[in-house]
Figure 1 (cartoon, rainbow, N blue to C red):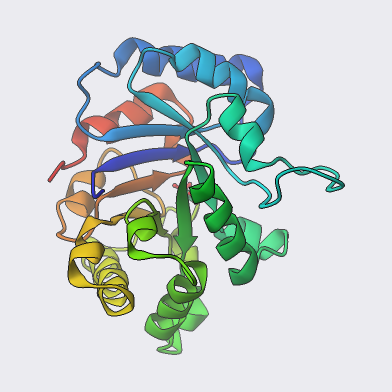
Figure 2 (figure 1 turned 180 degrees about the vertical axis):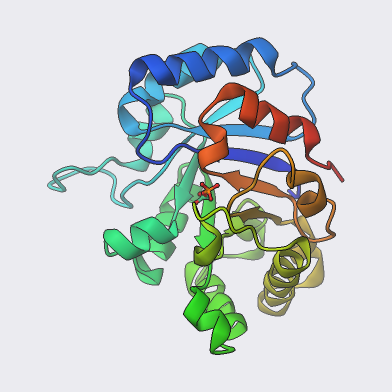
Length: 253
Ligand SMILES: O=C(CO)COP(=O)(O)O
């Protein structure tokens, strides 16, 4: 179902004490009736702690990756059932950093998306183009291709449970935010693609987030756009007060 979501991707940051401090700050200040859905994604070793600390609060906990298999000889991997077992509810899939540094492909993102849905985990599926692709004028076909391949084989009822995050690679960790118009253009392209792959009602039901240098000062303009339903936040999600500013300033439609 379409809703406004503010998700913090901590990436490979925060030792336990720092993670604890940030979560304590959020638990103290995120009101029970907070409007956007709030999600934090710490690294694997602190997921259980995050789940325990956020029990009874509106804060959800996501993993930053997972394997698609149930169990077995996959050294170093974590399965969907294991995440569910400890109380994780969401999982970020196909982040550009995983695609660039860890051989994540459209095919593995598709397998992971299906596995997440099969376990009632909400997949946050990332897509995004490089600056080079944008300058070559192939942004639209690239994004449409990523969406089509990530969702291949999914029924409309499943796609409604998927969250999509548009993260232009040139805007991640660079301080360069896509303008609200640029971000809206691509989020609208994604929604049109969903309507073409499924139908308009299904496309309307999918939450599409923007990620890339989202901050308290730019989130209102971004989320005020028709097709942007929230933010996937990196750097500005690490400190409770920075993240709270984003949560508080997000436009909930
Ligand atoms: O990659 C991101 C979130 O997944 C965005 O990171 P920054 O907010 O640090 O640019």
